[in-house]
Length: 271
Ligand SMILES: Cc1cc2nc3c(=O)[nH]c(=O)nc-3n(C[C@H](O)[C@H](O)[C@H](O)COP(=O)(O)OP(=O)(O)OC[C@H]3O[C@@H](n4cnc5c(N)ncnc54)[C@H](O)[C@@H]3O)c2cc1C
Ligand code: FES
Figure 1 (tube, rainbow, N blue to C red):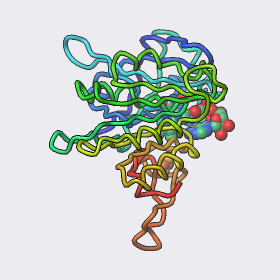
Figure 2: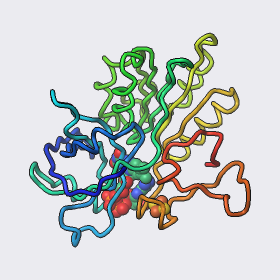
Figure 3: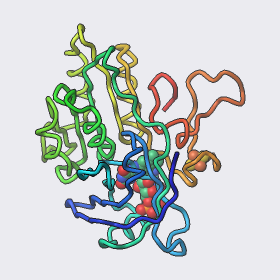
Figure 4: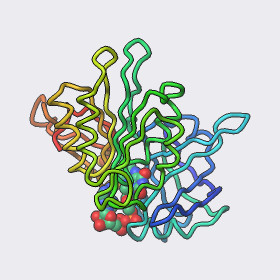
């Protein structure tokens, strides 16, 4: 059940470029969060920011007593995120969450080798995904791309926690030069037939469309986390819809990303 709370900022960390990590106190949200779910975040004073903004829950912070806080990784792109970047510990935020359908993790009885594919800020849901994979993360392959080296602020975090980390930048300043589709294609071609692979992707629409195409061609299970523009976050405004691939009738042509997603099976939607 989502909570609607006023919560305190515990920590704000600048990661270089326009990227920041914000830690927010919220034991109930942290305990309930599943990787791929999101929170709607606003400033403590709603007069300063009328509409809350959606952000993936990037990581859960635990103390000896259990989950106490959660973190979001964000990039400053406009008015709301600029205001967030000025918040200091103790500042109040308005938080609604956790919301939406997160990734469904591989079941122990149907194992698959997870391939995590992230473009830019699309890396945000994956630290929690790795936390929730537990020891299985050691077999995971992470393919993380961005425009430039500065757009890969979490590369160091994944390195010791996952089996393989492949970085790619469009300008060649870190890792392979180019987009993530080339290393993904190679990873899918190598896919271990006995164990199988499954892909989890988050990033801009064109990247997700390319990832979905590569996986659907090879019949490799693929989940996509979408980052549509959202106003309400709980299914009322219809500002976040995407077309379904196989609608059952005229009233069923679109899916609401905030409630039916943000994570979809690649076979469910058209990008
Ligand atoms: C489910 C979900 C999870 C998200 N998780 C994260 C996250 O973990 N970290 C993060 O940094 N961002 C995330 N986003 C995107 C984030 O919500 C927007 O960047 C944020 O709302 C921008 O607010 P702003 O007021 O700073 O910018 P605005 O002034 O509202 O917009 C600035 C610019 O960004 C564009 N923009 C705004 N929202 C989006 C969007 N959703 N997708 C693409 N372009 C957009 C606008 O068109 C405009 O050009 C997520 C979005 C969704 C739907
Ligand atoms: S954001 Fe309002 S319906 Fe999805």
